[in-house]
Amino acid sequence: MGSRKLASLVQPTPLKYHDGAVLQGDVPISIVWYGKFTPTQKSIISDFLLSLTPQPYQKLSSPSVSQWWNTLDEVYLRKAGIKSPMKTQILLASQVSDEMCSLGKSLTRDQISELAAKVGPKKGGIALVLTAADVTVEGFCMSRCGLHGSDRKSGSAYIWVGNPAIQCPGQCAWPFHQPVYGPQTKPLVAPNGDVGIVGMVMNLASMMAGTVTNPFGDGFYQGPKEAPLEAATACPGIYAKGAYPGYPGDLLVDPTTGASYNANGARGRKYVVPALIDPSTSSCSTLV
Image (cartoon, rainbow, N blue to C red; front, side):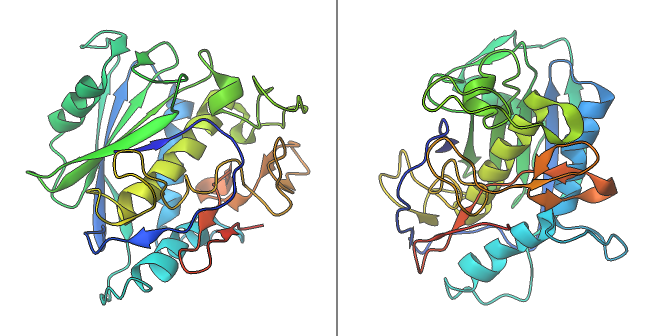
């Protein structure tokens, strides 16, 4: 259904609410690590997911990943007239590692949904399929950096994001790698020191936003249902104020590491999250 297209900067498009379901309340996440990921790589991604809705004792410095995530409740759910006291809370329910790549290292879209179904995501939950750098997926790099879909029967959704470090860092990890096309600007220093993983997190954030606001294809989107523009994909290539084609915007810079970022996460980690479009104003909103 939804997919994270290759980075480009376009004029924001108004999003419409199609009176369908959104994900609210507790949203359990089941992760499939497909291929080999280091413990550090797993930790960076897991910490990002935990940063979306941190526990009360976890105080994240502003601007934070949780502030970005809360925008979805405030801008989308409330403006849709959905009356519910429940915020969208992300919970890590389970994790499964498939290091030996049981379905091979070249996957089709149908195999992605097959892997998602194997972890048995709960109703209202999300199965997250993450593929390692040496695993190819149908359409990866050629037309998309990630995608999301759903299983109506189980009432659950799924997301796939691949590690672009080897296959297409200039497309799916920009601006932290030299772009393949367009202005050849110097790449930025990646937060957490891993270009492939920072690309995964940016694309995962985009897919998470699309999944909770348009899980079954009848929520918030614009354009054809088969190739919708969603909460984050309607603002491609925009990460901070001042963005223009070939420039992601005026991101913050960590004085110690030199890494660029726009959101603070759990355990002192730095992340980059995409702009979200405001469906009532058609403007792209960024944290910085």
